[in-house]
Figure 1: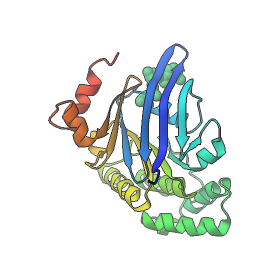
Figure 2: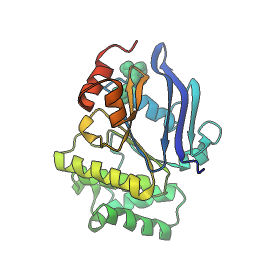
Figure 3: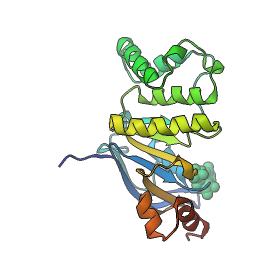
Length: 246
Ligand code: ADP
């Protein structure tokens, strides 16, 4: 049987001094799966992303990207990863093309291959005609599209998105949510999407609900609702995150 595991997290723990931010965190995301990391502010989502991207090192536990352990094989592991951070990291005074070419060069992609992939990714997102515009002149939704295209240039297996719709208007949010879900299916990508917004969840998504640094529940939307005996996902999320988990 083919191993579809793209991201595996096992018994992860992390503390800021005496403050425990994550404890006993274990879950997997498979290729072709969109996994929503759902948690209120302070749940530990950003800390988990900092560990997956290698910014912090875990006190305990293991993270593997397509079977490459990020401590033992960091280059191979991180080559499998595309990331869209919460704060934009585009250079406002460079054009779309310059930003994307710069990122491609950092990944060792040839200019010819980069230009081909840049065109593919931007066309997919109806952004190719903006190629020569400076980022400064794009609206928030279009900047996000460029960031997602950039995260995919080196053809990663896993895409991490840290609250990518924060600050966007409703149509831009909906466009990004629907694009990412389509991409997951079409490209067979594994997506881990951190959010606290229930309306970004699709019925087909896998859920990991994090609260106070501990996973409260994992499963499909229907499984989560049934397990906590709630009427809908909003109710389930409230039940799982309002009570003190420890
Ligand atoms: P989220 O991204 O879900 O809002 P975080 O990962 O930012 O959660 O935070 C998890 C916990 O760790 C919170 O209790 C937060 O206050 C704490 N925390 C985050 N960063 C630091 C830090 N640099 N120093 C101390 N505590 C921190």
